[in-house]
Length: 166
Image 1 (cartoon, rainbow, N blue to C red):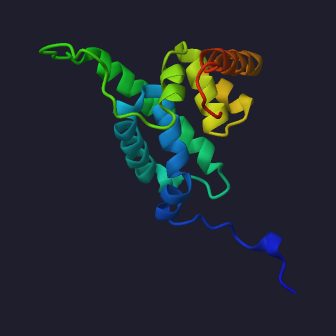
Image 2 (image 1 turned 60 degrees about the vertical axis):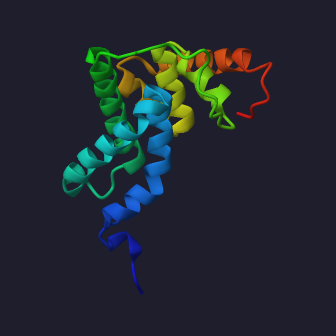
């Protein structure tokens, strides 16, 4: 009889990791850095993950590991954005009208203070437990839970007049 407890744990190919966790990482990046820089943060996340994947233990929580890398890349993106000049010839009369179905939600999420936005992104979009969110943000589990709750409450208030499903 085969004892499955004695079988070695084998990591999936990296392509499977990207396929399985890519959408979650993109949602986290988008929530943290906004839609314009999210794809760059996503790419940087998976490039860094590809380099480190051979050293990752087979029993590691891959999603938590990727969200942690995404957090660091998002912070890097934010710092880089702050250093870049933004050339503007003329201001448009109104914002771009290419509306997405959830544009109001993304706009409300972008308006949250950084700590709340990150806590909401890592817990609600990234699926991390509050303990891991606290470790990423460098605060306590209670503070991470409070930030996420405050962020969700702020989103609800901001979206009460907009028909968006959360």
